[in-house]
Length: 106
Image (tube, rainbow, N blue to C red):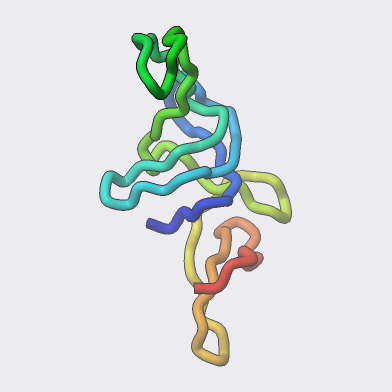
Protein backbone atom coordinates (compact mmCIF):
# COMPACT_ATOMS: atom_id res chain seq x y z
CA UNK A 1 0.00 0.00 0.00
CA UNK A 2 1.45 3.34 -1.03
CA UNK A 3 -0.40 5.50 1.49
CA UNK A 4 1.18 6.30 4.84
CA UNK A 5 0.10 7.73 8.17
CA UNK A 6 0.22 11.52 8.02
CA UNK A 7 -0.54 11.86 4.28
CA UNK A 8 -3.21 14.36 3.24
CA UNK A 9 -5.86 12.65 1.13
CA UNK A 10 -9.16 13.49 -0.54
CA UNK A 11 -12.12 11.07 -0.64
CA UNK A 12 -13.15 10.07 -4.17
CA UNK A 13 -16.41 8.18 -3.56
CA UNK A 14 -19.10 7.60 -0.99
CA UNK A 15 -21.05 9.87 1.30
CA UNK A 16 -17.92 11.87 2.21
CA UNK A 17 -16.89 12.48 -1.43
CA UNK A 18 -14.79 15.61 -1.81
CA UNK A 19 -13.81 15.86 1.85
CA UNK A 20 -10.14 15.81 2.73
CA UNK A 21 -8.18 14.97 5.83
CA UNK A 22 -5.03 13.42 7.20
CA UNK A 23 -4.54 9.67 7.49
CA UNK A 24 -4.44 8.73 11.17
CA UNK A 25 -4.07 4.95 10.73
CA UNK A 26 -3.30 2.50 7.94
CA UNK A 27 -4.64 -1.07 7.90
CA UNK A 28 -2.64 -2.74 5.10
CA UNK A 29 -3.94 -6.27 5.71
CA UNK A 30 -7.51 -5.02 5.16
CA UNK A 31 -6.55 -2.43 2.46
CA UNK A 32 -8.21 0.35 4.48
CA UNK A 33 -7.22 3.71 5.95
CA UNK A 34 -8.64 5.85 8.74
CA UNK A 35 -8.95 9.52 7.75
CA UNK A 36 -9.57 12.13 10.43
CA UNK A 37 -13.04 13.65 10.23
CA UNK A 38 -14.20 11.30 7.46
CA UNK A 39 -16.67 8.39 7.85
CA UNK A 40 -17.68 9.45 11.36
CA UNK A 41 -20.43 7.22 12.74
CA UNK A 42 -22.48 7.34 15.93
CA UNK A 43 -22.28 4.32 18.22
CA UNK A 44 -24.90 3.84 20.92
CA UNK A 45 -23.23 2.24 23.94
CA UNK A 46 -24.44 0.78 27.20
CA UNK A 47 -22.80 1.91 30.42
CA UNK A 48 -19.56 0.03 31.07
CA UNK A 49 -16.44 0.48 33.14
CA UNK A 50 -14.75 2.29 30.27
CA UNK A 51 -17.79 4.55 29.64
CA UNK A 52 -19.79 4.67 32.90
CA UNK A 53 -22.42 7.03 31.45
CA UNK A 54 -22.89 5.12 28.23
CA UNK A 55 -24.56 7.21 25.55
CA UNK A 56 -23.74 8.08 21.97
CA UNK A 57 -20.08 8.07 20.88
CA UNK A 58 -18.75 9.42 17.59
CA UNK A 59 -16.20 7.06 16.04
CA UNK A 60 -14.09 7.40 12.91
CA UNK A 61 -14.31 4.17 10.92
CA UNK A 62 -11.88 2.95 8.21
CA UNK A 63 -12.63 3.39 4.52
CA UNK A 64 -11.17 1.46 1.56
CA UNK A 65 -7.80 2.79 0.43
CA UNK A 66 -9.00 2.69 -3.18
CA UNK A 67 -11.53 5.43 -2.40
CA UNK A 68 -8.92 8.00 -1.39
CA UNK A 69 -6.20 9.79 -3.37
CA UNK A 70 -3.19 11.62 -1.99
CA UNK A 71 -3.12 15.41 -2.30
CA UNK A 72 -0.04 16.87 -4.01
CA UNK A 73 1.75 19.14 -1.51
CA UNK A 74 2.88 21.50 -4.32
CA UNK A 75 -0.35 22.10 -6.23
CA UNK A 76 -2.98 20.96 -3.72
CA UNK A 77 -4.57 18.68 -6.34
CA UNK A 78 -5.10 14.93 -5.93
CA UNK A 79 -2.67 12.62 -7.66
CA UNK A 80 -1.43 9.05 -7.83
CA UNK A 81 1.55 7.95 -5.78
CA UNK A 82 4.58 6.34 -7.39
CA UNK A 83 8.23 5.72 -6.63
CA UNK A 84 11.39 7.14 -8.15
CA UNK A 85 14.90 5.74 -7.83
CA UNK A 86 17.57 8.29 -7.01
CA UNK A 87 21.14 8.18 -8.29
CA UNK A 88 22.37 6.82 -4.96
CA UNK A 89 19.91 3.90 -5.20
CA UNK A 90 17.38 5.12 -2.63
CA UNK A 91 13.67 5.22 -3.42
CA UNK A 92 11.35 8.14 -2.73
CA UNK A 93 7.63 8.55 -3.15
CA UNK A 94 6.41 11.03 -5.75
CA UNK A 95 2.96 12.36 -6.57
CA UNK A 96 2.29 11.77 -10.26
CA UNK A 97 0.91 15.08 -11.64
CA UNK A 98 3.81 17.25 -10.52
CA UNK A 99 6.55 14.60 -10.16
CA UNK A 100 7.64 16.43 -7.02
CA UNK A 101 8.99 14.16 -4.31
CA UNK A 102 7.01 13.59 -1.17
CA UNK A 103 9.10 14.27 1.91
CA UNK A 104 9.39 10.62 3.02
CA UNK A 105 12.07 8.31 1.70
CA UNK A 106 11.52 4.57 1.44
